[in-house]
Length: 139
Image (cartoon, rainbow, N blue to C red; front, side, top):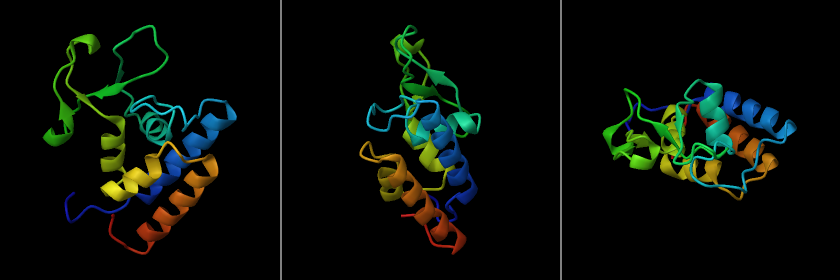
């Protein structure tokens, strides 16, 4: 992570609002976690901010696995083409969401953990936005 990265408090608020709205529709399931389901905080945040170029290795599945590579995705986050996904180079949703939210790896692990309830997510987002508003560095 670059030294000039700051926690994106507004992005965290957008992600929480999208996750809460999804929960009201019955579309949030942090416990049904597979990287890239689109059913966790990372997936709802990415969809809310238009980063929803999802690709799946099973077109019949409601679960999206990964995101197609976009310009600006760091090379270290990009995985080799998967023939099952149409041969596109791809990025894990947690990697892209973490980068756009300005999170360090420990903060990503906390926020995107499959153990989080909606209340946990509210608490974590509150803590992260307080840190962002005070100018604290990502961790």
